[in-house]
Amino acid sequence: MKSIPFAAVSGLLLAAAMLQGAQAQSSGGKAVTRDELRACMNRESELAAQRQAVEAQNRRNGEEFAAVRAEADELKAEQERLEREPNRTDRFERRVRAYNAKVAEAKAKDASFRASLDALNQAVVAHNTRCGGISFLPEDKEAILKEREAAGK
Image 1 (cartoon, one colour):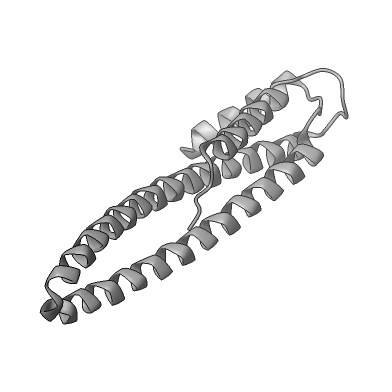
Image 2 (tube, helix red, strand yellow):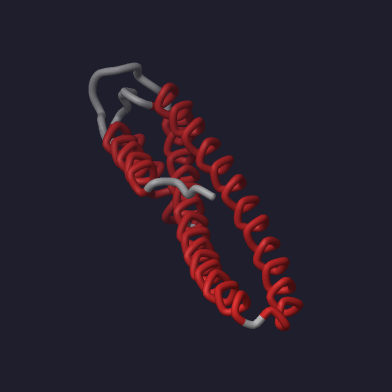
């Protein structure tokens, strides 16, 4: 059972931070209309929310994996005790079955997390391809920000 290394998540966060810096540029690159800028800014907000969801999922998975590891240690200790007291194996076998179910669930959650992380990475790359290095009029960005404020976003 493997989890995503912290460095991978950190790299993703760095890419997202660079994405925000790319959006702040107002000179050079392909000139875009206000609607195109709005679409890029909206997608950037969506990606930030998606990144937060992936980070939260990673934290939850890490906590669950830690609990599974702790339970594995408990089971190992109990197994050693059972070698000295063989008449208590039924209870131990029930615990092992429950533990194995938790491991399977944790692996499924890890696979789901990896799929979410891959989807986020692909979305960031697509966004950077479309919106990275664009140029826009500062008044367009100000107008979009005012629209968002009026809409309560």
